[in-house]
Length: 315
Length: 291
Image (cartoon, rainbow over all chains, first blue to last red; front, side, top):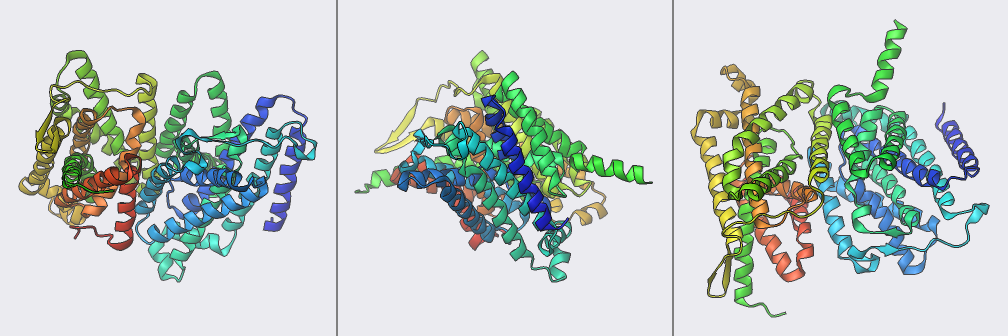
């Protein structure tokens, strides 16, 4: 399938799902659905750098929070409408990714990983001290009273927007994978030195994929303040975003765009169920345990099993 | 704002005392990351584990947390050896340490934190010691004992690690692993065994650093993650694999943080380590005393 055809299919599916969901009357479906879709975007975005290139980003929460706090800042400054916030948040997070990548991607991969982790701590400190966006107290955002497209509540709109953004993230990830860029990234993942010697502009490709990955994470965060109409630093910078966006691609499979999608839908749904039936602390423990189990025992994730099963059937 | 000499001297003294503690936090990372090339970002999880064990024993029996941690350090040593064994079998042997190994340690960090939350809750825990509330005063300069005692034991521990590394057969083998594993193999030494023991030593220092931490301040499970950036910043700033560099880097960071707290407010202090880390990576990746 060509990239254009895939994009068309993805957006049509997203629109159809959004339209069909409007028939559901249970409000909880939209809250849970929003969270799962948020993880779909984060996992897909993480995989563009982590899965395709092999550079680990521990700072997903930081880029997510950049998106969320761009929305808050624009709202406080001149009540910017949601589309403006989405575009700006994506751009700001992309620039942050570009800066971090420019400084650390020329060194060994582990330095990028550590710097991304530390970036989350520093941005947290920065936001806590920044009174304009509410500081440690957090900030309130009023959901518009009028919901467009005749939807009954604002969460319906946020959910539908999140669906479209998830489709967009998947389209970007697949386009990267099936392009010269994607082949360059795969070469970096397999052997960076050999890639460099064969004329792959490794640094430029790495920085570019870091920028795209971080921009998409920021995009996922832009709707977050509207979701609960309240945002505070420790929920926006929650470590669970960082863990989930690593665990989901690893559990689903990192080699193609479909792995993070499977991982996010599966793990995201399980977490919603556990959160409701048991508790949110247990839910985090389960994610951590699954991450460690998969990474030690099934390093290629669910898609790795599927591949192995296909190969066995073929012979 | 007028800066008095007393304020300045107090900031320097506080920074040095804090730096001594940071050296204990970072020396283990300096061994595992700097020498063994094992990127153990779960190191702070073992520090917090050490804090909680010191807390339990102190709470039940009233023993001094630092003495407890020193007595129990062999347990942490064994824990570290076991962890390295798993890491070696699952990642290093298969050549997957760069991405999956990192994710593995991240998972361990996360599991430890959540497990501690489930057992103890998110309340701050503290210990009672005989020196906790004592402060020596020399003129206008304060020496709070809750910082001085960890400082002294910590510096002694770091110097001890350096002496072990340079003056024993095992220590020299660790330094050799850092330089050339193949050559070590040719000498008939098993590098995996050496790395296993060295990683045990690294985790043992984390357990002791945990006791220092809970003497210095109340502890809750999530504060561990603030020490990840810090430990790696000290390690990189000092120069990879150099114990003296780690000590120097820890003092530099301690003083930088203390000045930031004094002149810009304590809420900005956690940003200092990241700033130093980024600056080092951008301008002098080999660090202060790096090879």
